[in-house]
Length: 278
Ligand code: C2E
Ligand code: CA
Ligand code: CA
Ligand code: CA
Image (tube, rainbow, N blue to C red; front, side):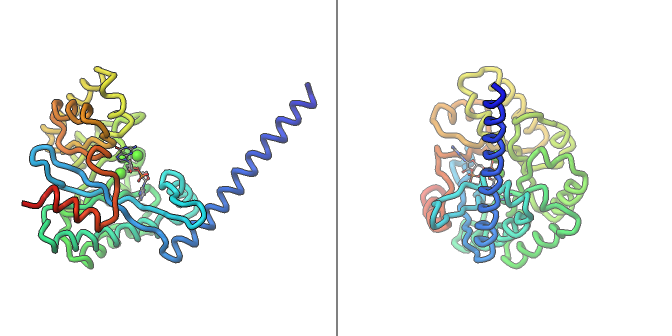
C-alpha cells in the first residue's frame, strides 16, 4: 500500500508540474500574441426589448492561434491577469472598440453604444485608467456616454475602483455590474446607485425555466432596478422560452446566442442594418 501511495504522490506531482509547464507555455505564446497584435475583438449585440433594436455591443477579445485554433478568453484572461499582460490586452480592446464604434456612428447608428470588460488589475493607481479611457474616447471622437465599462462584483470590494468609476461616470461613461447573481450578490452598489446596468449571469438564466424561485428573484431585482433607474440586461439567452419568461418579467435588454454570438465588426454592421435599419 505504501508503494502505491508514493506512486500516487509522484503522479500528482507530475500533474502539477505538467499543468505548470502548460501554463508557462501559454503565457509565452500569449506574450508573443500581445506583442505582435495577434489578438482580435469581436462584438455581441444587446437588444432592447421595447424597440427590438440593438442598443449596445459587448466587446469580447478573441485569440486565434495557428496551432491551437481559437483559445477562449476564459482560459487566457486569468493567465493575462496573473502575468501582468491584462493591461496591454485591455487597452488594445478598448482602443479597437472605440474606433469601431466611431465607424458604427458614422454609418448613422449613432444611438448604439459599446461595452468593454475590465479586470481588477487594470484599476491599480499606477495604471491611470481614467486617462487611458478618456484618451481612447477622445481619440476615437465618440461621446463619453457611448462607452460602458463592465466590472464584476468581486471587484466591487475595492474602494479605489469605485472612486475611479465614479470619476468616469461623472464624465458620462456608463457602468455595468457584470455576472450578477453568481455567488454572493451585494445589493449595496445598486442601492447606492453607482451603476447604470445590471447584467444577470448566464448561469442564472440557464436555471430560470426549471426554477420558479429564480423567476421571483429576477422579478424583484427588475422591480428594484426600475425604481433606481438601472437597466437590466440578461446574458446568455439562447431559447425562445427563456426570452419569453424574461420579457414577461420586464427585463430591459437581452444578450445571447438567441440573437447572435460575438462577431467581427463587419458582420455586426450587417446585423445593425437588419435590426436597426428602417
Ligand atoms: P463575460 O464578460 O461574462 O462575457 C459573456 C460571455 O458569455 C462571452 O464569452 C460570450 O461569448 C458568452 N455568451 C454570450 N451569450 C451566450 C449564449 O447565449 N450562450 C453561451 N454558451 N455563451 C454566451 P467569452 O467571449 O468566451 O468570454 C468569456 C469571459 O472572458 C467574459 O465573460 C469575460 O469575463 C472575459 N473577457 C472576454 N473579453 C475580455 C476583455 O477584453 N477583457 C477582460 N478583462 N475580460 C474579457
Ligand atoms: Ca462582460
Ligand atoms: Ca457576464
Ligand atoms: Ca462571466
